[in-house]
Every structure is written in structure tokens, then in C-alpha cells.
Amino acid sequence: MKIHEYQGKELFRQAGVPVLDGIIAKTADEAVKAYEKLGGKIAVVKSQIHAGGRGKGTVKDNPDQRGVVVCKSADEVRAAAEGLLGKVLVTIQTGPEGKTVNQVFVETGCDIARELYLGIVIDRAKMKPVLMASTEGGVEIEEVAEHTPELIFKEHFDPAVGLEAFQVRKLCKKLKIEGAAAKAAFKFMPAICRFFVDYDCSMAEINPLVITGDNQMIALDAKIDFDGNALFRHKNLLEYRDLSEEEPSEVRASESGLSYVKLEGNIGCLVNGAGLAMSTMDIIKYHGGKPANFLDVGGGANTEQVTEAFQILLSDPNCKGVLVNIFGGIARCTTIASAIIEASKIVGFTVPLVVRLEGTEVEEGRKMLAESDVDIINATDITDAAKKIVAAAG
Image 1 (cartoon, rainbow, N blue to C red):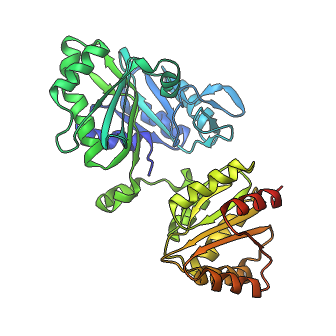
Image 2 (cartoon, rainbow, N blue to C red; image 1 turned 90 degrees about the vertical axis):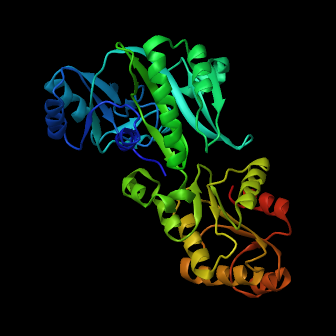
Image 3 (tube, rainbow, N blue to C red; image 1 turned 135 degrees about the vertical axis):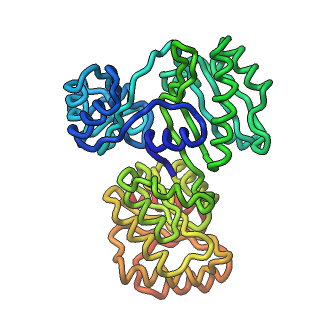
């Protein structure tokens, strides 16, 4: 689950991670009032969307309007808010379609001496969280990783222990942080690592992390993803979820217990099991097609879930064909066949449907489909299925 920058900073503050004062605003008038309440001469108006690269992002119909604007007066704050609210912001992470800005964060300015990058993710190879830091703050970290990976410094840490003092010293040396700023780092870096573990984050990124003129270390950004599988331990975080920032079909699927991710292709995939979903998408690509989604109905799929899965798939106007690739284990092939037959009566298949069944009660399941009046294209194996759906979907 992703949250907005202003929400992340609220959590940072509670965890002892230094941030600046700021106020959220949903109208230009609210933005001006926020500026006046903050009381500083300089303020920054920041678009709030679930994507990075906002500082270099531009409004779709106005390339001169950036997603982050430094303002020195109430009039400038108003102009910035009016230029962002209700507009579509395009960044390196949104893709060309962009995201609509529904709120802005008005934040106090500060005396920036240096900009750094700091991020934490899980390194699955080492089965530990890893703190990454770089001198290239304010720059898309993807560009740094591609062109100058030697500028990204890493320290893995034990989640039960946290980031240790010797690791902070190593990072400070590599980042050329000295004196009072290093003293601030000894508080800041372990605090953000504790935050990452305590909140079951899958990612925590600060870009930029700034060192101020008086050698304080401040999180000038907060991009946080939480592990959805751990949210049962953090019920309070659910109130931070912004459904308007999420793909509607993905929200609908999650409400039905389905794992769904919308993609850019034209072939819908209905499978049971995440590994099977990945291999299905791979083989579709291998044979020249493009998956329209990742959809896993799970091992215990029933008629209602399969019906809902088809409704979600067919609601995508780009979907020109559907591949059903099921390996019957917990869910028997006869159960899936019955669900497909019932779903056809409710949904009505309007695009080619290729079905590949394998596993428990497969012969009975295939017989049920063959004797039904559902218009399907049978496939003998996964390769046969991929070739047939790519051809059928054009």
C-alpha cells in the first residue's frame, strides 16, 4: 500500500525522523491560508500523487507548470496551487497518462547546503533490508543506478538489531559527511531504519535527504510503500489509503480476494497461482503477444470469484482475448470448468477464450467444457495455449 508524502512525513515525525512543517490543501484558498499559517517567507507547494519525480514532472496541458514549486509570496502560492489542483501531472514514474492532482502540500522552506539520496528496500537475495545512500540527491535514482552505480552505497542490516554505529560511520565517510552533520546522521539513519522495520515497509525513500546550513539532516521527501500482507498488524494505516490513486479494477479485484495488476497489453490472463501467472505472461510475450494483466484467482477459486475475474478482465477495452491457464490442485479442474460455464451465462464472452486445464480431474473438466455451449478454444499445453491466444487476439 502506498501513501502520500504528507502522510509519510506525519509518520516520520512520530518516529523521530526530522521533517519540515507543512499543511495539506485541496483548494487554492486553503493553500494560501496554509502559507500564512506557516509564517515563513518561503514555502514549497508540492503536488501529492502516488509517484516519484514530481519535481521534474510537468502538467499535461502546461509544460511550464512543474509538480513542485518554490514560492515567496501568497500570490505565488495561489498561482502554484491553481496550476496544479485538478490538473494531470506527468512524471517519469506515471507514464504519459499522468495522474490527477487532487491536493497539494504546502511546506516551509529551509536552508539547503547539500542534497543526498536515501532509500531502504528488502534485498531478497540476502534476506535483509538494505539501506542505500548516494550523493546524487534530487536526481532520479534509476538514472544513477544505470549510469553511475558506483555512487550508490549500501549497508544491509539485521531488522532485529537495526543499523549499527559502525555502519553509519562507513556511510558518512563515503558520503563525505563530517562534524555536526555526521552527528545528525547518527540519529537520522538508525531512526529511518527502525521506522522501516516497525511499520513493515517494502520501501522507504527520501529524495532528497538534505543537510541544512546549520548541519541538520531533514527528510525533504517521503515515499513509502507498506507490505500489504502485514497490514493486519497496522490497522491504523488503512486510514491513509487513497483509493482515488489506485487502479479501480485492482481495487475491485482486491475486494473479491483476487490478485490483479493491470498491464498495457491486449491478452487477459486468468490463472491460479502467482508463479503460474508469471510463467503465463512470459510465454505470451515469448510468442509475440502482450499480457493485459496479472490475475491470480488463487488455489481455492470458486464460481463467484471466477465470474468476477472475467468481469474485471472484460471491462478492460484493450482486452482482445483471454487465456485461462489452470493447474488443478486445491481447486479441481471440474470446479474451474463449472465456474467457466456459469460465468459465461452471467458475463457473456465477447472475445476469444482459450482454455488450458491440467491437474486433478482434468479429463472430467475438459469433458464438461466440450459438452457445454461455451465458445472456447481448447489448448493441450501452455505453449499451445499461448500460440492460440496470440493468434486469436490478433
